Image (cartoon, rainbow, N blue to C red):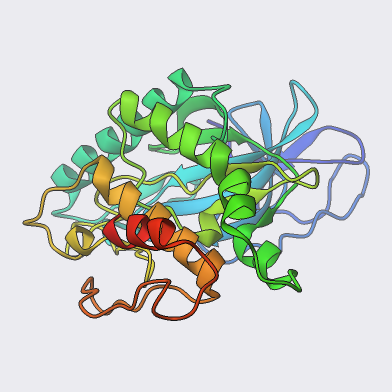
Length: 294
């Protein structure tokens, strides 16, 4: 793959190391952090890379433009910091010496996850995965962009206590999305307010997809867990995970919405966490028991 940038002025390409288009003189500055793909990079002869949105132990998430459709997309680049050292002069990912085997195995997990997600494109409550492709000695996933805010930000804007009926109604698409994931043999492992998005018309959908290694403590990757939302079994590589792992996390999200705070949890232990009824939340005993049990 040629390591080139795209010029928004003349729509040509030029070497990624330059900040001014040699054809038309348009300035194309790069504000992305070192080690990430530069702003304006022309990736796979289709996507124009924008700013970095997130960096985690699995890789880097960018905003981008799909030149084929002209629409914005979200690009996830597989680049585990614990297994990769740098990029070469062409932008290709360089794997650390001795990490070749875990890099390949975790890369296969990444590919398998996003292949499964592509099969679920269009399912209610799930961010749509549009494409999966190889470049730069790694793999990229392109996901649909939807204008939205996180459930965390949405909750911060609320001025009144939320009823269970409203919470359940808002999260109904996420329940449906998780059901589809589990039917396909996929466990999300990252259900939390930051990974649930709310569109301007009030539709909720789930994002934040990741492999098992990223959502488990002491794995090959630098883990990304969510205190109060990650299930106890995610804090140990010896514990089996399954659909119930997401049930726990979704119940924790409901707890947060109804109680105003996440369940008390330290390193995966939730012993002694009060029920919704015990902290005075205005819910029925049945709802309190169901959330506590989950």
